Length: 121
Length: 416
Image (cartoon, rainbow over all chains, first blue to last red; front, side, top):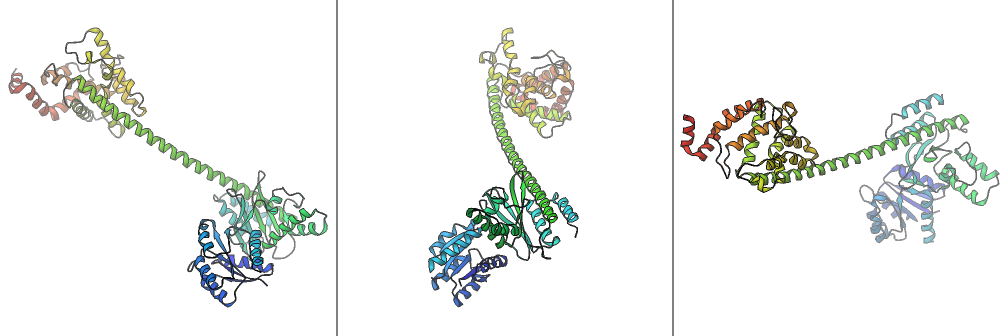
């Protein structure tokens, strides 16, 4: 079973994405903060991580850097609002595997996640 | 539960909403709560990017606002726009049950099946059993995404028809609100443009006025060498107007002052040979000289804000009894400002020293004004002017007379 970690500071987004991917037989965990996400990554390395770039506390870029330093095999897809899209270059330099811009199309989201898994296998 | 009544009330309260988002939120809340659905949410058309975005969601499963989009070319959207190959709408709405039927029981092409499957997938991801389009004049403005009834069971035709009414009213309201916003925006732009134009025009007028003032000084210097003539005329004119109790608030003071400063501007068009002639003018030369009043008005004509000033300049050689020039106006036909200019200018010209003459004695000037009151001059202006002269200005003019004629001259005249 593919392990997916959804990191977003909004509970609704976590819930929705969890439901969406559980339907498709993913094993989904959610984290509301960078700290929580890093704990989960350390415990049980996920295959793919959907990481919101803008979060209070430790922001997405910082979390990305920490994940990639210790667990480079974890595929990280950054999620960003259009206004922050310029940060994506930085994210790419820091090893982000892909990025998607909110509002996202569910079809593309699913495809992106599948692509990352097949790329890694 | 009486749907009819509840929906009617909802439709009525819609007109109160000016912001369509507030309205749509109200609709989603209303459907989820009053109609007892698992959830209800709203996809709204984003016309800038041509896609549909969730702007509100209510119920057990909330769809996060602004997280998900549905592209305009998604089969669900195309289908609700009536652009799909197969007829999969039933009574103009998308129902999950009906889509399943199509997939399982009807013979459709593989391409269509794929599209139907995509719609089903999306509806399932959104936990929707019914999608109701909000259409205004053929334009799909939004979609009501509806979950299932908590009581279980299918929607009845009557219920679906009520949702359609709601969606239709919502579309109208969205469009009205959008028009209003557009109008407001356009109004704002127009207002800004008008302000800018007004500013530029004012600046232009101001520049023109400044040029006129320099010209007026130039003319005065050519005409007579008395320093400060314009300043003195202006001061006397304003004091006389105040003495008369004239209302000089705001623009009226500016108009009077501009008239006092610019009254001889037309002399710019009079040949120097005439203007500077020391001997008295012959008849031909007088005809030309008299043109300066009308010429002055013509020069000022481009100043839209100075229409009154132009008229004042035009009339500053008219006589109270109608025997002046250029038009022979009389009495109240002559602007009071022109009447004031006529008096102060005449007085100042008489007492001033010119290159070819010494000024007339003060008493002579006063006698001239008084004896011409009601003929050349407006009696009320003369009266006010005399009062100003005697109470405020006499000391000044006596000092000037003293400079010009020497002590003796004044004493001689006073003695006589």
